[in-house]
Structures are given as structure tokens and as C-alpha cells.
Image (cartoon, rainbow, N blue to C red; front, side, top):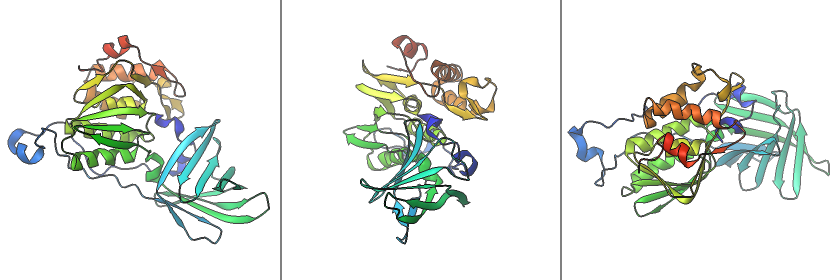
Length: 323
């Protein structure tokens, strides 16, 4: 959920993802309506996609293998990097991981687990490279080199399906989601509404607000079904809808985020530049007054490692629904 899943060591090594394309949230004038809008009135997006570069690993003498997706999870208070490859590759690093290394666990398969300590960490362009040795219970030792591409730390695992004029989106939000909105707009011109299902949060807040701006620019509505559950960055994305609706029973969960200069969002003064990106986004989607009011409500509603499910009164107070 938001920034709570990012590991401390990444802040020293990861170069911030730059989105080259500037996305406007305002409608263009009507001088070129035919070429800029689908027949159903949804705007044709022209923003380029964010490139998500695959990570790789080399185990012993095996050549580098491509890893097509990456997820970061917190299990039993330990941050795990999970790389989905042909074999299951899991690198487990505790919260105090430093460039000098702590422990790394490599799961080759369900029965063959290797562990190592004192892994080195270095930069290779925009990638982070972990290098060291791992040993299994039979004392078989292998060199392990893992190259983690920066873009995959916030890729997420969201998926969508199309049903008529609705796109159903679920999963953890990230750079994949940004590209998926582009794909929906390009390949499914009849879609008018993004229906959010189970959204745990976002792994890259900077990209998530740009995804929201895509939704607003296109003119999509957002909708929650009775069994929808959206948390953290999922709420940010819901707010981007040009119209926003919710069926009874849908859950909207908010909380603070972590961290800026060692402080959680609720600990920062309202004048702190740490709020700037989120404030700009909520002003864009909810207005100059309601946007900041709602943002500051969210960061004070629950700590970054907790969640507050909004009441109907709160949902109405901050005008999250338009119909």
C-alpha cells in the first residue's frame, strides 16, 4: 500500500523513474474533436507508455535469465522481493538491509533453498545489482547475481478484463496499470467506465497519480461494485473518474504513507514539500478546496501501516461520489 512496502535500502540506490511524457488533465479545445475523440466521446490518449525493463539473475554457471515481473511484499515484518521466473526466485531482505548486506534467500524450487549473507549492492545505470554467494543444506555453494531494474520495483500486478463498455481492473497498481489504461483506450474504444475490484494499493505513487491523470484526461467514469475493496492508491485512482459511483457494500480504505525525510506523511507539516505531488493530484481530480481537504483527511485517518475504511458520512463529506 503506497510507500509502506518500499525497502529502506532502495532510497539510496534507486534513481527516480522519470515519466517523459507530460500529461494534461484539461480537455483540448473543440477545433479537432473528430481526431481526438472516439465515437463514444472518450478521448483518444496520445501519451507514450512507461517502459518496464525486465530484471535478470545468474545462478552459478547458469546464464542470465529474464524476469518479466517483480513484486515487493511484506511477510512477517520482513520485506521480500519476489521475482516471477520459470523457477521461483525469492530474495528476502530484512528492513535493515544495508549496502554491506544482511541475508539473502534464494528459492530455486519448493525443495531447494539457498541462503547467503553479506551481499554486495551496486548501481548499474538505473539498475540495482546484488552480488554474493548462497549455500543450501548440502553445502552446495553458488554465486548469485541479481540485477533488479528500477522500473520493476513499482510495476505492480494489476489485470483487467473488458465487458461491454466497462473495463474491470484489479490487483496492485503500478507502471503496468499505467500501460494498461493506454491499452484499454487504444484497443477498446467502447469502454466508458473503469470498474475497480480488489485494489490493495500502489507500489509507485508517482506513476499512480499519472495513471489517474490518464483516466481523467480520457474522460472515463470510475465505479465500485458492491464487492469492491479499494485501498490507498486504489482510492487515488477512483478519484480520477470524471464521474464516480459506488454500490452499497464497496469498501474505500485510506491511510498515511511513509516516508519523506524519515517522517510519515501525518508527521509532516502541511507546508512540507513532501505533500506536493499528492496535493497537486487531488487538486486536479477533486478541486482546489476539496482535494487538499480530502488528502489531509486520508493521511490522518490511519497510520501508514494501518487502514481506515471510510464511512458513508465521510464519503459524502469529501464528495467522492458524483452520482
